Length: 121
Ligand SMILES: [Zn+2]
Image 1 (cartoon, protein in one colour):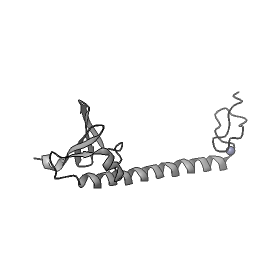
Image 2 (cartoon, rainbow, N blue to C red):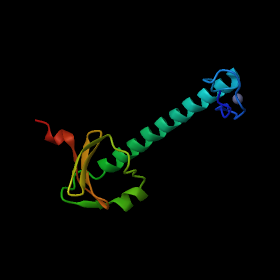
Image 3 (cartoon, protein in one colour):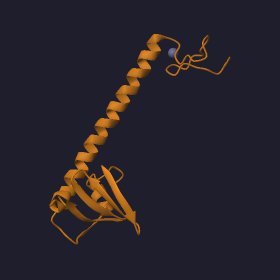
Image 4 (cartoon, rainbow, N blue to C red):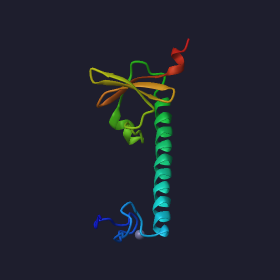
């Protein structure tokens, strides 16, 4: 018997079966509701932030050779840790994708921003 088991939702001690996680079905329902609401909120936040990244990156298209300071992009709402793909890293330069836009990124800059469509044959 594990006497340290407590309800995941309210923290009351649990008695009986050792695999119990909740003291009542009300606590179980509340916990699952909170979990799914939290996940929905996280998914929604991520989708919004990725859309904002894409909008910002789209604005950087058409400037071959130009480099953009990451801190300035972050001030505009760019979230560098959110990407839709990582194509690889070499010599401290990572290649990322944000949907159809590909770009190179160092610790401080973003450059070579282009639409992947340009490279389609
Ligand atoms: Zn409970």
